[in-house]
Length: 404
Image (cartoon, rainbow, N blue to C red; front, side, top):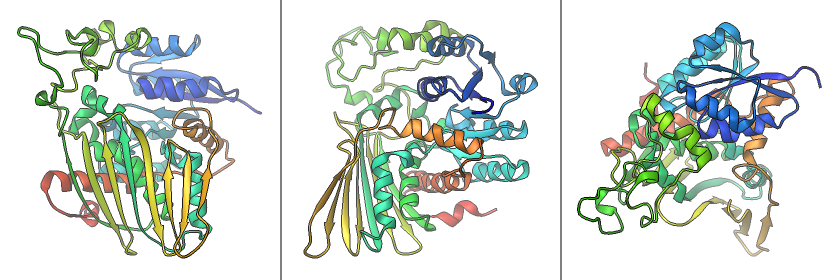
C-alpha cells in the first residue's frame, strides 16, 4: 500500500470530527497526524471521541506549519474563514479538501484558485452530493441520453434539521455569506454538474425568516421565564418541540468549559436568537443555453428529503434521495421505469465515505479531482448572486461578480 497519507483536520466541530475524522480514522492508508482549532477544549474532546492518542494539537495553522509535514489538510472551519485558511494551507505546501463552500465570495474563490495554480497543489471541494449513488445514477441517465435534451429542472429540499442553523453561527450572513451559499451551494453545484457545467447568466431569489422568530414560539411563555439561552438549560426544554438538546458527548465539545474559552453557544434558542439568514426560500437560475432551474429549500416541518425533477425533450426524471428512487416517464407512449438504488453505508446516504475515498485517491495520483476549485467558484457565484437578489430585491447578472 505504501506510506500512509498524513492528513490534518482544521476545525474540530461536528463535520470535522464526526464526519471526516470518523471516516479517516477507520482507513488503513491514512494517519490523522494533527488537529487544529482555536478552542483547545474542542480539539482535545475531538481526539478523545476519535480515540486518537498520538495526534498533535495546534491552535493556529502557522504553528502547525512549523512542525508538521502533511500530504493534505481537511478544512471544516466556519465558511467566512475558508478563503484565508485555504490560502494559508496552500502557501505551506498542503493539498486541500475544503468542505463547501470554497469561499463566500467570487473574489475569495478566485484568489484561492490563483494560489493553487501557483503552488501546483490540489484543491478539492466537499460536494458530497455528487457522490450520492442516486444522483450518480441520475447523472449517468442524462449522459446516456435517456431524457434527451434537458431544458428545465427543479429541486425541493425539506430539511427539518436546518432549523438548528438559527441556533448556530450559520444564522449570520457575516459568517456564511448567507445560506444560499452555505446550504444552497450543494444544490447549485448539483445542477451545474448534472447539466455539464453550462454558463449561468442570471439569478433571482426570494427568502425570509417566516417561522423561527420570537413571535413564532409555539407555546405560551410564563411570566418571569424567558426562553434560552441554550436548549440544554432552557426553562421550556421539556415543552418546546423544537428543542435541540446536546448529548453528553457533544457537551464535551460544546459545553461550559468550551464556552468559557470562546463564548460560543451551539444551541441557542432558534426563535429568539439574533439572525439575518433565512429559514425558507426559492432561487432560480437561467443558463446561457436556455436551461432554467429552481431550488427550493425549507427548514421547517417534520420532513427530510431532496427531490428533483429534470425534464428533457424525451423524458422526465423524478427523483427522491430519501426513497432512493428515480422514476423515468417517457414523453410519448412508453413504459414508465422506476429505479430503486440500494442503500449505502455512511453519512449522507453513503456519499461522505465516497468523497473521502476519492480525495485519498487524488492524493495518490490515481484519479483526478471530480470537484475542482473552479466548480466551487461556480456554485459560490450562484449562491452569492442569490443572496444579492434576496437582499436587494432584484435580478442579478452573474457577470457582475466577475468584474475586476
